[in-house]
Length: 452
Image (cartoon, rainbow, N blue to C red; front, top):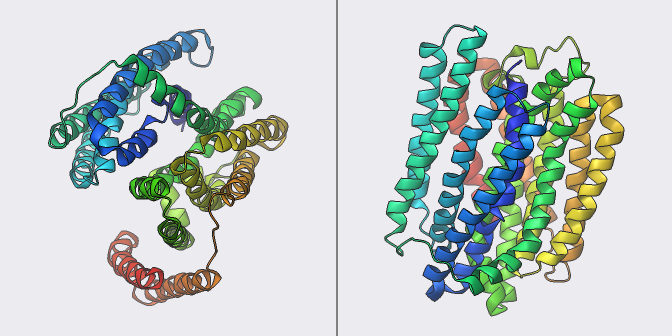
């Protein structure tokens, strides 16, 4: 736990700057290419150039600022930041390539390359932890963390190279500096980028505020206990993001054609899929909450002797953050596809201000538990405002009968699992694999029929 807090602080610090360099060009590129397939080469070449310029400017700024911050100015922290600095450029280029593939509905190879190299990455990390540095001395821990970061760097380099080779089947990928077009795409992305940057701020700023506002003796432990459940939720949020990015090309096309019937059908089905996904995750959480925390960390995170609350309590809150994030993201993508980023900017300015004020007031008194509650409230406000601004563009009707049916299905899956575990339990991980696979297929099949 004593090293995880440092990892969390560096990760959250650099993620803010990586987001600055990203300019959220991934989503904008998907929308632009989907609407103008004939200009794909011009769009992607100029975006690659713009990403390079932003990376150089922003990441140098990150290193420079970190040097003057006392909680980052150590040789170990600065070394980690420097390694992640190189990781970021390949991540940005990979994102541009994936946007091209997504807009052309050619994501099959990227999924294969990502899964394959994730497996290799996990294998390398396991070798580092269990074989190269099994000793828990401080020096070995320092070295093992550096090697883990280098393993991540190798993974993103190889993954980017493989996607680059495959994407060349669509168009040749290179750099182009069209000053007029780069300026146009920059200003087109700017409102959305500012809005999404503010969302990153209110989602990540609590870690930074915990390190500043908490008593220094407890701040590191608070960050560690808080970061584990938040990291789990961030990973799960990616599922919703992948799905919404997959529908963005069609959604952008329908908005350009003003095909309201298809837009309504796509949005309604997307809502059902996202809600079903969240209910399934919630069901798994109710069944395996303690096991999940132990698998991704250790028992110290659910048996804290310092705080009344633990990582388990925070995860109970963050599961509902996930629900409101899924639904609010759907409204956000409606605003993007309809080219209404300015409305999103107004929403996120308000939510960010509220979030920071609440965190500053509540963290000194109630620590990381109320930081999670503040994030939940922020997501609820974001969803409500997203709906308010989207309803002028599109009338969304909620199918309450569908919600009832999918809830009944989730309850059935839950009770069925409890029955098997109570009567035929073998070993927790074997149960997870055997019963889990069977019930996943049941849930997916029945929910597919309901949604269809």
